[in-house]
Image 1: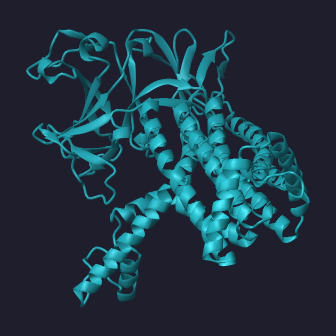
Image 2: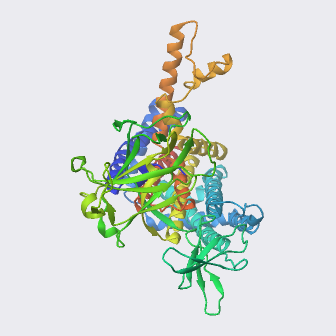
Length: 605
């Protein structure tokens, strides 16, 4: 999983971005709503009368409707919306969800190397799609159906305002969706926990060995359960542990009668709390470099450092406090990639060394080296001890450095990693090395994932209700789907706006398809002015689309947060709060726009 460092920015960083976005998005979306309302009114009544109608509607809204808004009437409409949703048999979605889980075991690959990730991805993905499907279809047919059948006039004849109708519908559909999502949460949690629960027994006899310290130990192998087995070691005191297989391990205990028992799996359902740092590079001569070596991969997410040279990757971590590590050692998590220029022994891992350097290079303090062997495609843990031997290039040193007192200054920790095998390479990106803080609670992290799904559901409901106040059901459904797709592809649209895509914009890409041109070669047309026109139109279209996408919820970014749960990363509360603030903002904007759209149809006035 490739992690975006922006997701772990501190509260004071992203709150500024959120405020700026709100200051831009709210007035722009409001202006767009006024323009759309004027266009609709102008088509119906003419340009002048349409402008008067829009002005009268805005004046009425702020002078009367919003001023005398009634929460009691809104809750009453919300209850009616809930009863309507139940009559539409929305609870069938929960039944389908439960049936899918009953038969999921027949389709999930239980031989997977990452069973917890498989189960969690299935649960979260299924929940997301079913809940969004529910939110879309329960809210898109409500208002248009009432308007088409004129049943809404039984409501508007009462002292009910358009704002109360719109917000009441949103609250009602959100309430019924929340109840269904809560049921899915309970079923999903039980499904995952029970699906991961298993144990082992001893397969064969134990083998007695003697360790370097003279203590007697016993080694053995477990039975094959859930398509895997473990090797384990028992210490002289009868306690031990297994190796890590399928991303979990078991503690082992020998009873007085000689029976060996295994604990339930450990570390398969966790919430890792990472502390990320900033990455910089040194070149082959040990001088600062912007990035490492390109070994020929098209995807440049990682840079590579060459072994047997002075090339290195250096991470700088801030706010590293001794109080956060009560046992005196720091746990580093490594997710390095390996590029081999010669095969050699295929199963032989590539060696590396790690140094801890003082942040001030003039002090010339370096602890280490700490040798390690890179484990490809899996996370490995390195422990930085409290006491480190001072490194001197000229020879072995007898001086001992204290990790927190001598090597960490002002909360800043510097880690330097080099590849130790000549002509071999380590591939690194900024998130590939991080400090692993004490783990969070999986149950809380699982709840955070569902909270983000809930926020996405609320946003979709508000968006759909807004469109349904102006458009007929099929058109409102199409508009919501298109908006969702644009918001989901916001990253792609941003690349298109910055001209970072091969083949150019839509017009240029169309010409290349017709002419069957290579995407990598320059576009050469017979008339240079025509090429300029095409690129200019593509640029204008890309900027307009980019502005439109930037104002919409980034649904893909929201959906990716649930992957953090599947990959056993803790979702920071700041991110949950960030999406909560964004969802509340969009709820307000879409509710206000829905009010003006409904007023333009003159069903509530």
